[in-house]
Image 1 (tube, helix red, strand yellow):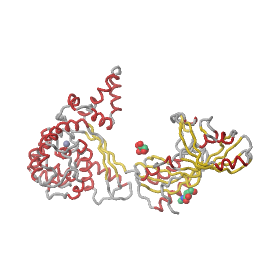
Image 2 (cartoon, helix red, strand yellow):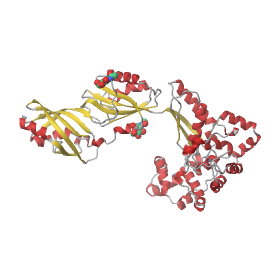
Image 3 (tube, protein in one colour):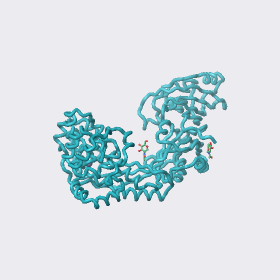
Image 4 (cartoon, helix red, strand yellow):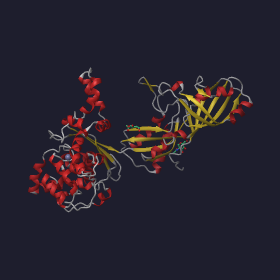
Length: 537
Ligand SMILES: *[C@@H]1O[C@H](CO)[C@@H](O)[C@H](O)[C@H]1NC(C)=O
Ligand SMILES: *[C@@H]1O[C@H](CO)[C@@H](O)[C@H](O)[C@H]1NC(C)=O
Ligand SMILES: [Zn+2]
Protein backbone atom coordinates (compact mmCIF):
# COMPACT_ATOMS: atom_id res chain seq x y z
CA UNK A 1 0.00 0.00 0.00
CA UNK A 2 1.35 3.32 -1.04
CA UNK A 3 1.33 6.12 1.44
CA UNK A 4 2.90 9.49 0.92
CA UNK A 5 5.60 9.23 3.57
CA UNK A 6 9.27 9.44 2.87
CA UNK A 7 12.43 8.01 4.31
CA UNK A 8 13.17 11.34 5.94
CA UNK A 9 9.91 11.15 7.91
CA UNK A 10 11.03 7.90 9.54
CA UNK A 11 12.42 9.34 12.80
CA UNK A 12 9.24 11.33 13.37
CA UNK A 13 7.07 8.33 12.54
CA UNK A 14 8.92 6.14 15.01
CA UNK A 15 8.83 8.76 17.73
CA UNK A 16 5.11 9.24 17.36
CA UNK A 17 4.34 5.53 17.21
CA UNK A 18 6.28 4.84 20.36
CA UNK A 19 4.42 7.68 22.06
CA UNK A 20 1.18 5.82 21.28
CA UNK A 21 -0.09 7.77 18.29
CA UNK A 22 -2.34 6.25 15.65
CA UNK A 23 -1.52 5.96 11.96
CA UNK A 24 -3.58 8.97 11.00
CA UNK A 25 -1.98 11.17 13.63
CA UNK A 26 1.37 10.13 12.21
CA UNK A 27 0.23 11.33 8.81
CA UNK A 28 -0.94 14.58 10.35
CA UNK A 29 2.39 15.24 11.97
CA UNK A 30 4.18 14.45 8.74
CA UNK A 31 2.00 17.18 7.22
CA UNK A 32 0.50 14.85 4.66
CA UNK A 33 -2.38 16.63 2.99
CA UNK A 34 -3.34 13.86 0.61
CA UNK A 35 -6.90 13.15 1.66
CA UNK A 36 -7.02 9.62 0.30
CA UNK A 37 -4.11 8.65 2.57
CA UNK A 38 -6.26 9.31 5.64
CA UNK A 39 -9.08 7.20 4.28
CA UNK A 40 -6.75 4.26 3.74
CA UNK A 41 -4.66 4.55 6.85
CA UNK A 42 -7.15 2.88 9.15
CA UNK A 43 -6.82 -0.40 7.34
CA UNK A 44 -3.10 -0.37 6.76
CA UNK A 45 -1.47 0.84 9.85
CA UNK A 46 -2.80 -1.35 12.60
CA UNK A 47 0.46 -2.37 14.13
CA UNK A 48 3.40 -0.05 14.63
CA UNK A 49 5.94 -2.41 13.14
CA UNK A 50 3.75 -3.33 10.22
CA UNK A 51 2.95 0.29 9.80
CA UNK A 52 6.50 1.44 9.50
CA UNK A 53 7.37 -1.23 6.98
CA UNK A 54 4.19 -0.72 5.01
CA UNK A 55 4.82 2.96 4.82
CA UNK A 56 8.36 2.71 3.65
CA UNK A 57 7.91 -0.14 1.26
CA UNK A 58 7.05 2.38 -1.37
CA UNK A 59 9.28 5.15 -0.29
CA UNK A 60 9.94 6.23 -3.81
CA UNK A 61 6.36 7.39 -4.15
CA UNK A 62 6.82 10.89 -5.34
CA UNK A 63 4.12 12.65 -3.41
CA UNK A 64 5.17 15.66 -1.47
CA UNK A 65 3.40 16.77 1.67
CA UNK A 66 1.02 19.66 1.07
CA UNK A 67 0.75 18.96 -2.57
CA UNK A 68 -2.97 19.32 -2.96
CA UNK A 69 -2.94 18.70 -6.67
CA UNK A 70 -1.64 15.22 -6.19
CA UNK A 71 -4.49 14.46 -3.83
CA UNK A 72 -6.70 14.23 -6.85
CA UNK A 73 -4.40 11.88 -8.68
CA UNK A 74 -4.12 9.36 -5.86
CA UNK A 75 -6.33 6.46 -6.84
CA UNK A 76 -7.80 3.90 -4.55
CA UNK A 77 -5.19 1.17 -4.39
CA UNK A 78 -6.24 -2.29 -5.53
CA UNK A 79 -6.00 -3.48 -1.94
CA UNK A 80 -9.26 -4.90 -0.69
CA UNK A 81 -8.74 -3.63 2.83
CA UNK A 82 -8.47 -0.08 1.73
CA UNK A 83 -11.97 -0.06 0.29
CA UNK A 84 -14.02 2.74 1.73
CA UNK A 85 -17.27 0.87 2.00
CA UNK A 86 -17.63 0.24 5.71
CA UNK A 87 -19.73 -2.90 5.41
CA UNK A 88 -17.19 -4.51 3.16
CA UNK A 89 -14.35 -3.48 5.43
CA UNK A 90 -16.00 -5.16 8.38
CA UNK A 91 -16.49 -8.31 6.40
CA UNK A 92 -12.94 -8.51 5.18
CA UNK A 93 -11.75 -8.08 8.73
CA UNK A 94 -13.64 -11.11 9.91
CA UNK A 95 -12.51 -13.09 6.88
CA UNK A 96 -8.95 -12.27 7.41
CA UNK A 97 -7.33 -13.89 10.45
CA UNK A 98 -4.34 -11.60 10.39
CA UNK A 99 -6.57 -8.57 10.50
CA UNK A 100 -8.42 -9.85 13.50
CA UNK A 101 -5.30 -10.19 15.60
CA UNK A 102 -4.04 -6.86 14.49
CA UNK A 103 -7.35 -5.29 15.39
CA UNK A 104 -6.85 -6.38 19.00
CA UNK A 105 -3.45 -4.78 19.21
CA UNK A 106 -4.88 -1.58 17.91
CA UNK A 107 -7.51 -1.37 20.60
CA UNK A 108 -5.31 1.00 22.54
CA UNK A 109 -6.57 4.53 22.21
CA UNK A 110 -4.38 7.00 20.37
CA UNK A 111 -2.66 9.30 22.85
CA UNK A 112 -2.98 12.21 20.50
CA UNK A 113 -6.44 12.19 18.92
CA UNK A 114 -7.99 10.18 21.79
CA UNK A 115 -9.72 7.88 19.36
CA UNK A 116 -11.31 10.53 17.20
CA UNK A 117 -9.41 9.40 14.14
CA UNK A 118 -9.76 5.72 15.07
CA UNK A 119 -13.11 4.06 15.76
CA UNK A 120 -14.90 7.37 16.25
CA UNK A 121 -14.26 8.08 12.63
CA UNK A 122 -15.85 4.92 11.33
CA UNK A 123 -19.11 3.25 10.36
CA UNK A 124 -20.89 3.91 13.69
CA UNK A 125 -20.52 7.65 13.45
CA UNK A 126 -21.34 7.38 9.81
CA UNK A 127 -24.65 5.65 10.36
CA UNK A 128 -25.91 8.35 12.71
CA UNK A 129 -24.96 11.00 10.19
CA UNK A 130 -26.68 9.12 7.42
CA UNK A 131 -29.86 8.50 9.37
CA UNK A 132 -30.13 12.21 9.97
CA UNK A 133 -29.34 13.18 6.41
CA UNK A 134 -32.03 10.87 5.12
CA UNK A 135 -34.41 12.59 7.48
CA UNK A 136 -33.37 15.90 5.95
CA UNK A 137 -33.99 14.51 2.50
CA UNK A 138 -37.53 13.48 3.28
CA UNK A 139 -38.53 16.96 4.23
CA UNK A 140 -37.01 18.43 1.18
CA UNK A 141 -36.07 19.21 -2.40
CA UNK A 142 -33.30 17.74 -4.46
CA UNK A 143 -29.75 18.95 -4.91
CA UNK A 144 -26.34 17.37 -5.44
CA UNK A 145 -24.77 16.24 -2.22
CA UNK A 146 -22.00 18.14 -0.57
CA UNK A 147 -21.01 17.88 3.05
CA UNK A 148 -19.21 20.06 5.37
CA UNK A 149 -18.59 18.82 8.86
CA UNK A 150 -17.06 20.35 11.88
CA UNK A 151 -15.32 18.89 14.80
CA UNK A 152 -15.53 21.18 17.74
CA UNK A 153 -13.61 19.64 20.53
CA UNK A 154 -9.93 19.01 20.58
CA UNK A 155 -7.27 19.37 23.19
CA UNK A 156 -4.67 21.77 21.87
CA UNK A 157 -2.15 21.24 24.69
CA UNK A 158 -2.03 17.57 23.70
CA UNK A 159 -1.05 18.54 20.23
CA UNK A 160 1.49 20.99 21.59
CA UNK A 161 3.04 18.32 23.79
CA UNK A 162 3.39 16.00 20.81
CA UNK A 163 4.88 18.76 18.79
CA UNK A 164 7.51 19.40 21.47
CA UNK A 165 8.15 15.67 21.49
CA UNK A 166 9.11 15.57 17.81
CA UNK A 167 10.54 19.06 17.60
CA UNK A 168 14.04 18.06 18.63
CA UNK A 169 14.06 15.38 15.98
CA UNK A 170 12.89 17.84 13.39
CA UNK A 171 15.61 20.32 14.22
CA UNK A 172 18.39 17.74 14.33
CA UNK A 173 17.55 16.25 11.00
CA UNK A 174 17.16 19.71 9.49
CA UNK A 175 13.66 18.82 8.42
CA UNK A 176 11.39 21.53 7.22
CA UNK A 177 8.38 21.11 9.42
CA UNK A 178 6.42 23.89 10.95
CA UNK A 179 3.85 23.57 13.71
CA UNK A 180 1.30 25.33 11.52
CA UNK A 181 1.74 22.72 8.78
CA UNK A 182 0.56 19.91 11.04
CA UNK A 183 -2.86 18.83 9.81
CA UNK A 184 -5.57 19.55 12.38
CA UNK A 185 -7.59 16.66 13.79
CA UNK A 186 -10.77 18.24 12.55
CA UNK A 187 -9.40 18.47 9.00
CA UNK A 188 -8.41 14.80 8.96
CA UNK A 189 -11.75 13.84 10.50
CA UNK A 190 -13.57 15.83 7.87
CA UNK A 191 -11.66 14.21 5.01
CA UNK A 192 -12.32 10.71 6.26
CA UNK A 193 -15.98 11.18 7.09
CA UNK A 194 -16.67 13.14 3.95
CA UNK A 195 -15.39 10.24 1.89
CA UNK A 196 -17.53 7.76 3.83
CA UNK A 197 -20.70 9.83 3.72
CA UNK A 198 -20.37 10.66 0.05
CA UNK A 199 -19.94 6.98 -0.71
CA UNK A 200 -22.87 6.02 1.49
CA UNK A 201 -25.19 8.58 -0.03
CA UNK A 202 -24.14 7.90 -3.60
CA UNK A 203 -27.11 8.25 -5.90
CA UNK A 204 -29.25 9.62 -3.09
CA UNK A 205 -30.25 13.20 -3.65
CA UNK A 206 -29.55 15.32 -0.62
CA UNK A 207 -29.44 19.07 -0.32
CA UNK A 208 -26.19 20.58 0.91
CA UNK A 209 -25.91 20.13 4.63
CA UNK A 210 -23.49 20.69 7.40
CA UNK A 211 -22.70 18.29 10.21
CA UNK A 212 -21.43 19.29 13.61
CA UNK A 213 -19.89 16.63 15.85
CA UNK A 214 -18.75 17.23 19.37
CA UNK A 215 -16.49 15.03 21.47
CA UNK A 216 -15.63 15.20 25.12
CA UNK A 217 -12.97 13.46 27.15
CA UNK A 218 -12.63 13.46 30.95
CA UNK A 219 -8.81 13.57 30.88
CA UNK A 220 -8.70 16.75 28.91
CA UNK A 221 -11.36 18.77 30.64
CA UNK A 222 -8.88 20.59 32.80
CA UNK A 223 -6.09 20.40 30.23
CA UNK A 224 -5.99 24.05 29.46
CA UNK A 225 -6.41 25.39 32.97
CA UNK A 226 -2.73 25.67 33.76
CA UNK A 227 -2.27 27.94 30.75
CA UNK A 228 -4.43 30.56 32.38
CA UNK A 229 -3.76 29.86 36.04
CA UNK A 230 -0.41 31.59 36.10
CA UNK A 231 -1.80 34.88 34.88
CA UNK A 232 -5.19 34.69 36.57
CA UNK A 233 -4.18 33.25 39.92
CA UNK A 234 -2.99 36.48 41.47
CA UNK A 235 -6.16 38.42 40.92
CA UNK A 236 -8.42 35.48 41.62
CA UNK A 237 -6.94 34.35 44.92
CA UNK A 238 -9.70 35.82 47.08
CA UNK A 239 -12.45 34.37 44.93
CA UNK A 240 -14.34 31.24 45.70
CA UNK A 241 -13.16 28.18 43.82
CA UNK A 242 -16.41 27.82 41.93
CA UNK A 243 -16.17 31.31 40.60
CA UNK A 244 -12.72 30.42 39.45
CA UNK A 245 -13.80 27.48 37.37
CA UNK A 246 -16.71 29.44 36.00
CA UNK A 247 -14.33 32.11 34.85
CA UNK A 248 -12.14 29.52 33.23
CA UNK A 249 -15.08 28.18 31.26
CA UNK A 250 -15.70 31.56 29.78
CA UNK A 251 -12.01 32.04 29.08
CA UNK A 252 -11.66 28.91 26.97
CA UNK A 253 -12.36 29.99 23.50
CA UNK A 254 -10.23 28.18 20.99
CA UNK A 255 -8.48 31.42 20.12
CA UNK A 256 -7.56 32.09 23.75
CA UNK A 257 -5.94 28.67 24.03
CA UNK A 258 -4.03 29.13 20.77
CA UNK A 259 -2.75 32.52 21.99
CA UNK A 260 -1.77 31.17 25.41
CA UNK A 261 0.16 28.32 23.79
CA UNK A 262 2.01 30.78 21.60
CA UNK A 263 3.07 32.75 24.66
CA UNK A 264 4.12 30.01 27.05
CA UNK A 265 7.76 28.94 26.94
CA UNK A 266 8.62 25.29 26.25
CA UNK A 267 10.17 24.93 29.71
CA UNK A 268 7.12 26.30 31.48
CA UNK A 269 4.83 24.13 29.41
CA UNK A 270 6.82 20.98 30.21
CA UNK A 271 6.61 21.76 33.93
CA UNK A 272 2.87 21.35 33.75
CA UNK A 273 2.27 18.87 31.01
CA UNK A 274 3.61 15.36 30.26
CA UNK A 275 5.65 15.03 27.08
CA UNK A 276 5.05 12.78 25.23
CA UNK A 277 1.39 12.82 26.33
CA UNK A 278 0.46 10.16 28.87
CA UNK A 279 -1.60 7.12 27.96
CA UNK A 280 -5.27 8.12 27.89
CA UNK A 281 -7.79 6.46 30.20
CA UNK A 282 -10.15 5.78 27.32
CA UNK A 283 -11.40 7.24 24.12
CA UNK A 284 -13.54 10.33 23.60
CA UNK A 285 -17.29 10.25 23.95
CA UNK A 286 -19.14 11.55 20.94
CA UNK A 287 -21.82 14.04 21.97
CA UNK A 288 -24.73 15.13 19.90
CA UNK A 289 -24.41 15.10 16.14
CA UNK A 290 -26.09 18.03 14.44
CA UNK A 291 -27.09 18.07 10.80
CA UNK A 292 -28.09 21.45 9.44
CA UNK A 293 -28.91 22.64 5.96
CA UNK A 294 -26.30 25.14 4.94
CA UNK A 295 -27.40 28.75 5.05
CA UNK A 296 -28.97 30.47 2.06
CA UNK A 297 -28.26 34.17 1.52
CA UNK A 298 -30.85 36.55 0.12
CA UNK A 299 -30.46 40.14 -0.96
CA UNK A 300 -32.65 42.94 -2.26
CA UNK A 301 -33.69 46.55 -1.70
CA UNK A 302 -36.53 47.75 0.45
CA UNK A 303 -38.75 50.81 0.53
CA UNK A 304 -40.40 51.96 3.71
CA UNK A 305 -43.48 54.10 3.28
CA UNK A 306 -44.48 54.96 6.85
CA UNK A 307 -43.17 56.96 9.78
CA UNK A 308 -43.88 54.55 12.60
CA UNK A 309 -41.87 51.44 11.78
CA UNK A 310 -38.44 50.64 13.22
CA UNK A 311 -35.96 48.68 11.13
CA UNK A 312 -35.40 46.02 13.77
CA UNK A 313 -37.67 44.96 16.66
CA UNK A 314 -37.77 47.80 19.16
CA UNK A 315 -37.52 46.50 22.68
CA UNK A 316 -37.03 48.69 25.74
CA UNK A 317 -36.63 47.05 29.16
CA UNK A 318 -37.83 43.76 27.75
CA UNK A 319 -41.01 45.33 26.40
CA UNK A 320 -41.91 45.69 22.75
CA UNK A 321 -42.59 49.26 21.70
CA UNK A 322 -43.72 48.77 18.11
CA UNK A 323 -45.73 45.87 16.87
CA UNK A 324 -43.56 45.18 13.84
CA UNK A 325 -40.33 46.09 12.08
CA UNK A 326 -38.95 46.27 8.57
CA UNK A 327 -36.87 43.12 9.00
CA UNK A 328 -39.78 41.11 10.37
CA UNK A 329 -42.13 42.18 7.59
CA UNK A 330 -39.57 41.18 4.96
CA UNK A 331 -38.47 38.01 6.71
CA UNK A 332 -41.83 36.42 7.51
CA UNK A 333 -42.79 35.39 3.94
CA UNK A 334 -39.17 34.45 3.12
CA UNK A 335 -38.78 32.26 6.20
CA UNK A 336 -41.92 30.33 5.43
CA UNK A 337 -41.05 29.94 1.73
CA UNK A 338 -37.56 28.62 2.54
CA UNK A 339 -38.80 26.84 5.64
CA UNK A 340 -35.87 28.24 7.58
CA UNK A 341 -35.41 28.22 11.36
CA UNK A 342 -34.22 31.79 11.66
CA UNK A 343 -32.49 34.68 9.98
CA UNK A 344 -29.82 37.28 10.34
CA UNK A 345 -30.59 40.66 8.77
CA UNK A 346 -28.19 43.39 7.69
CA UNK A 347 -28.49 46.46 5.51
CA UNK A 348 -26.53 49.32 4.08
CA UNK A 349 -27.10 51.79 6.90
CA UNK A 350 -30.50 52.20 8.54
CA UNK A 351 -33.20 54.81 8.90
CA UNK A 352 -34.86 56.11 12.03
CA UNK A 353 -38.31 54.88 12.95
CA UNK A 354 -39.94 58.09 11.63
CA UNK A 355 -37.97 58.26 8.37
CA UNK A 356 -39.26 56.86 5.07
CA UNK A 357 -37.01 55.19 2.51
CA UNK A 358 -38.17 55.98 -1.03
CA UNK A 359 -36.60 55.83 -4.50
CA UNK A 360 -34.83 52.60 -5.35
CA UNK A 361 -34.75 51.59 -1.74
CA UNK A 362 -32.06 50.47 0.70
CA UNK A 363 -29.92 47.40 -0.03
CA UNK A 364 -30.33 44.60 2.49
CA UNK A 365 -29.12 41.03 2.86
CA UNK A 366 -30.16 38.19 5.10
CA UNK A 367 -28.79 34.82 6.07
CA UNK A 368 -31.46 32.13 6.32
CA UNK A 369 -30.53 29.58 8.96
CA UNK A 370 -31.18 25.90 8.36
CA UNK A 371 -33.44 26.39 5.31
CA UNK A 372 -35.32 23.21 4.38
CA UNK A 373 -35.68 24.45 0.86
CA UNK A 374 -32.87 26.17 -0.95
CA UNK A 375 -33.61 26.28 -4.63
CA UNK A 376 -35.88 28.90 -6.12
CA UNK A 377 -36.26 29.81 -9.79
CA UNK A 378 -36.30 33.41 -10.95
CA UNK A 379 -40.05 33.17 -11.37
CA UNK A 380 -40.49 31.83 -7.85
CA UNK A 381 -38.34 34.63 -6.45
CA UNK A 382 -40.53 37.13 -8.26
CA UNK A 383 -43.62 35.53 -6.74
CA UNK A 384 -42.03 35.68 -3.32
CA UNK A 385 -41.29 39.37 -3.84
CA UNK A 386 -44.89 39.98 -4.83
CA UNK A 387 -46.05 38.17 -1.73
CA UNK A 388 -43.90 40.47 0.46
CA UNK A 389 -45.22 43.52 -1.43
CA UNK A 390 -48.80 42.46 -0.85
CA UNK A 391 -48.34 41.45 2.79
CA UNK A 392 -48.14 45.04 4.04
CA UNK A 393 -48.47 48.54 2.62
CA UNK A 394 -45.70 49.76 4.91
CA UNK A 395 -42.86 48.21 2.90
CA UNK A 396 -42.02 46.99 -0.61
CA UNK A 397 -39.12 44.95 -1.88
CA UNK A 398 -37.32 44.86 -5.23
CA UNK A 399 -34.32 43.05 -6.76
CA UNK A 400 -34.92 40.09 -4.46
CA UNK A 401 -32.36 37.38 -5.24
CA UNK A 402 -30.26 34.54 -3.86
CA UNK A 403 -26.61 35.54 -3.45
CA UNK A 404 -23.43 33.94 -2.13
CA UNK A 405 -22.01 34.52 1.33
CA UNK A 406 -18.99 36.21 -0.26
CA UNK A 407 -21.08 38.61 -2.34
CA UNK A 408 -22.74 39.90 0.82
CA UNK A 409 -19.57 41.71 1.83
CA UNK A 410 -19.94 43.96 -1.25
CA UNK A 411 -22.79 45.71 0.51
CA UNK A 412 -20.52 46.93 3.31
CA UNK A 413 -17.53 47.75 1.09
CA UNK A 414 -16.55 51.40 1.15
CA UNK A 415 -19.80 52.27 2.85
CA UNK A 416 -18.37 55.51 4.20
CA UNK A 417 -17.56 56.88 0.76
CA UNK A 418 -20.99 56.23 -0.66
CA UNK A 419 -23.48 59.05 -1.10
CA UNK A 420 -27.07 59.27 0.06
CA UNK A 421 -29.84 61.64 -0.98
CA UNK A 422 -32.52 62.95 1.35
CA UNK A 423 -35.50 65.26 1.42
CA UNK A 424 -36.25 67.13 4.64
CA UNK A 425 -39.30 69.27 5.42
CA UNK A 426 -37.87 72.29 7.24
CA UNK A 427 -39.55 74.95 9.39
CA UNK A 428 -37.96 78.37 9.90
CA UNK A 429 -38.75 80.99 12.52
CA UNK A 430 -38.24 84.01 10.31
CA UNK A 431 -39.86 84.04 6.89
CA UNK A 432 -37.79 82.77 4.00
CA UNK A 433 -36.42 85.24 1.44
CA UNK A 434 -35.35 84.59 -2.13
CA UNK A 435 -31.73 85.30 -1.13
CA UNK A 436 -31.91 82.53 1.46
CA UNK A 437 -32.99 80.07 -1.20
CA UNK A 438 -30.24 80.95 -3.67
CA UNK A 439 -27.67 81.05 -0.84
CA UNK A 440 -28.52 77.45 0.13
CA UNK A 441 -28.73 76.28 -3.49
CA UNK A 442 -25.20 77.60 -4.16
CA UNK A 443 -23.48 75.75 -1.30
CA UNK A 444 -21.23 72.93 -2.53
CA UNK A 445 -19.20 70.34 -0.58
CA UNK A 446 -19.79 71.76 2.86
CA UNK A 447 -17.81 69.94 5.56
CA UNK A 448 -19.57 69.46 8.90
CA UNK A 449 -18.12 68.64 12.30
CA UNK A 450 -20.69 66.47 14.02
CA UNK A 451 -20.37 65.64 17.67
CA UNK A 452 -22.17 62.39 18.44
CA UNK A 453 -25.87 63.42 18.58
CA UNK A 454 -27.50 63.59 21.99
CA UNK A 455 -30.18 61.12 20.89
CA UNK A 456 -27.66 58.33 20.18
CA UNK A 457 -25.15 59.19 22.89
CA UNK A 458 -26.41 56.35 25.09
CA UNK A 459 -25.21 53.74 22.58
CA UNK A 460 -22.37 55.45 20.67
CA UNK A 461 -19.05 56.76 21.91
CA UNK A 462 -18.61 60.50 22.12
CA UNK A 463 -16.64 61.63 19.08
CA UNK A 464 -16.50 64.33 16.45
CA UNK A 465 -17.06 63.06 12.90
CA UNK A 466 -16.52 64.99 9.73
CA UNK A 467 -19.09 64.52 7.01
CA UNK A 468 -19.61 66.30 3.70
CA UNK A 469 -22.83 67.71 2.27
CA UNK A 470 -22.16 67.67 -1.47
CA UNK A 471 -25.13 69.79 -2.55
CA UNK A 472 -28.53 71.11 -1.47
CA UNK A 473 -31.63 72.47 -3.16
CA UNK A 474 -34.67 74.24 -1.78
CA UNK A 475 -38.29 73.71 -2.83
CA UNK A 476 -40.45 76.49 -1.40
CA UNK A 477 -43.70 75.50 0.37
CA UNK A 478 -44.74 78.65 2.26
CA UNK A 479 -42.91 81.49 3.98
CA UNK A 480 -42.00 79.30 6.97
CA UNK A 481 -41.64 75.89 5.30
CA UNK A 482 -39.53 74.43 2.53
CA UNK A 483 -38.36 71.06 1.31
CA UNK A 484 -34.60 70.73 1.47
CA UNK A 485 -33.01 68.20 -0.86
CA UNK A 486 -29.55 67.03 0.26
CA UNK A 487 -26.88 64.89 -1.34
CA UNK A 488 -24.45 63.84 1.38
CA UNK A 489 -21.72 61.47 2.35
CA UNK A 490 -23.13 58.32 3.95
CA UNK A 491 -23.38 58.59 7.74
CA UNK A 492 -24.22 62.31 7.89
CA UNK A 493 -26.70 63.09 10.68
CA UNK A 494 -29.32 65.07 8.74
CA UNK A 495 -31.65 65.94 11.61
CA UNK A 496 -28.75 67.40 13.55
CA UNK A 497 -27.59 69.42 10.56
CA UNK A 498 -31.03 71.04 10.36
CA UNK A 499 -31.72 71.81 14.03
CA UNK A 500 -28.09 72.12 15.11
CA UNK A 501 -28.30 69.73 18.10
CA UNK A 502 -27.52 72.60 20.54
CA UNK A 503 -24.49 73.58 18.53
CA UNK A 504 -23.05 70.06 18.46
CA UNK A 505 -23.15 70.04 14.64
CA UNK A 506 -21.27 72.90 13.02
CA UNK A 507 -22.06 74.54 10.71
CA UNK A 508 -25.80 73.89 10.77
CA UNK A 509 -28.86 75.28 9.04
CA UNK A 510 -29.71 77.65 11.92
CA UNK A 511 -26.27 79.25 11.62
CA UNK A 512 -26.45 79.37 7.81
CA UNK A 513 -29.91 81.02 7.73
CA UNK A 514 -29.39 83.02 10.97
CA UNK A 515 -32.71 81.85 12.45
CA UNK A 516 -34.16 78.91 14.35
CA UNK A 517 -34.88 75.97 12.07
CA UNK A 518 -36.37 72.57 12.76
CA UNK A 519 -36.93 69.38 10.83
CA UNK A 520 -40.53 68.12 10.53
CA UNK A 521 -40.12 65.15 8.19
CA UNK A 522 -37.27 63.24 6.60
CA UNK A 523 -37.16 60.85 3.65
CA UNK A 524 -34.25 58.86 2.26
CA UNK A 525 -34.42 59.35 -1.52
CA UNK A 526 -31.56 57.10 -2.56
CA UNK A 527 -28.79 54.94 -1.18
CA UNK A 528 -26.11 54.88 -3.83
CA UNK A 529 -24.75 51.37 -3.35
CA UNK A 530 -24.61 49.36 -6.58
CA UNK A 531 -25.31 46.04 -4.88
CA UNK A 532 -27.29 43.83 -5.24
CA UNK A 533 -27.48 44.00 -9.05
CA UNK A 534 -30.86 45.14 -10.37
CA UNK A 535 -33.20 42.42 -11.62
CA UNK A 536 -34.80 43.43 -14.91
CA UNK A 537 -38.60 43.38 -14.81
C1 LIG B 1 -25.48 36.74 12.54
O1 LIG B 1 -24.45 37.51 11.97
C2 LIG B 1 -23.44 37.88 12.88
C3 LIG B 1 -22.49 38.80 12.18
O2 LIG B 1 -22.29 38.43 10.85
C4 LIG B 1 -22.75 36.63 13.42
O3 LIG B 1 -21.76 36.98 14.35
C5 LIG B 1 -23.80 35.77 14.08
O4 LIG B 1 -23.21 34.57 14.51
C6 LIG B 1 -24.91 35.47 13.13
N1 LIG B 1 -25.96 34.74 13.83
C7 LIG B 1 -26.32 33.53 13.49
C8 LIG B 1 -27.40 32.94 14.33
O5 LIG B 1 -25.80 32.95 12.55
C1 LIG C 1 -42.67 45.13 -5.40
O1 LIG C 1 -42.60 46.52 -5.14
C2 LIG C 1 -41.49 47.20 -5.74
C3 LIG C 1 -41.50 48.62 -5.25
O2 LIG C 1 -42.69 49.27 -5.52
C4 LIG C 1 -41.60 47.10 -7.26
O3 LIG C 1 -40.51 47.73 -7.88
C5 LIG C 1 -41.61 45.64 -7.65
O4 LIG C 1 -41.77 45.50 -9.04
C6 LIG C 1 -42.72 44.90 -6.91
N1 LIG C 1 -42.55 43.49 -7.23
C7 LIG C 1 -43.54 42.66 -7.40
C8 LIG C 1 -43.21 41.34 -7.90
O5 LIG C 1 -44.68 42.99 -7.14
ZN1 LIG D 1 -4.68 9.54 16.54
